[in-house]
Structures are given as structure tokens and as C-alpha cells.
Length: 191
Ligand SMILES: [Zn+2]
Image 1 (spheres, rainbow, N blue to C red):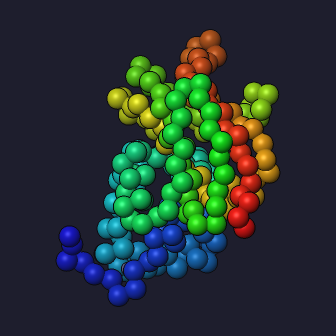
Image 2 (tube, rainbow, N blue to C red; image 1 turned 180 degrees about the vertical axis):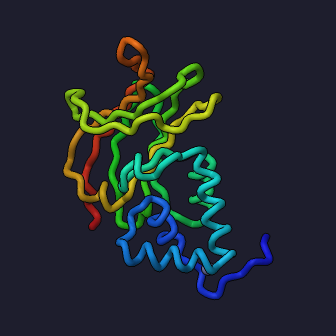
């Protein structure tokens, strides 16, 4: 691979947290200092960022979730992260949970997004009321899938509930529904 080497490589989980903007300020500072002085870890981090497919500003996505490319997800799995995956088709539903051995949970939402210039990802409660929205998520022209990555510790804290996720295309008259998915969440029983 690369001739660069690091005596104390940053832990992948720490890099992910850094990338998601989820580190405490002092920990973030330590990571930044390390990256400044370490070509090997910078390159590794750069690889991740390059794979995210145009995530413009991590702050836009909040600290708990991010929309990533399929390639980025595959990379995380290759790197040894334990990712619990749910694949959904438009109109589909999944019964989801997490277990203590999962690092991340990924929802792979199949959708035909060709022709949609901008796509928002909207989370709704069981009755379809909007709870939050990721605006203008990165999608490629040929996108057939949206990958939503969630931090496992946040999912773990959720009570049993039904959540709907919608992909919508904002237009002059409001917005057009592209696809809707339903998640029936059950808290982990193996704590
Ligand atoms: Zn390093």
C-alpha cells in the first residue's frame, strides 16, 4: 500500500467520531494535532473523506448521522467495523434493532433518484409528522441508493417506536415524495 507508517495510528473508531464531528473538544484537538504531524493517518482520513461523495459540511448532518456513499460504507466494513445493515426498497419496512456487538447501523435505501436535482431526507414519526430533515443530501446522478449511517449508541437509547423516513425532492410547488421507508425499532434485548 503506502510507504507511510505511523507508530501509533489513530483508532478507526476515533477517526470516524472525528469525521462525524462527535468528539469532545479536547479529544478533537488531540486528533487534529496528530493529523497535522502524521502523513500516514492524514492520508487514511483523507481517503475516508474522499469516499464520502461530496459531503459538504459535516455540521449540516448533525453529529448523529450522515449520508454516505455505498463505497464509503463498503470501506468501513473492509476496515473491520461491524456494521448492521438494513436494505429497504421504496414502500418497504424493516424491523430493526441493535446489539452490543454492532459499531454502526446503516440503512441502505434503494431509490431511483435520477432527475432529482436536490434530495432531502426527512424523518417522521409513525403518523408522518416531520421530526427532522437532512437537507440536500449528496446523491450522484446515477444514484440508486441512499446510505444513512447512524451512531449505534444513539440508536441503542431509542425506545420501541415506528419511524418513517422519506426521500423528497423540493420543487417550486413544495416537494415531491420520491420514496418512503418504515422502520419498526425494537430495543436490543441482549444488553
Ligand atoms: Zn498517525
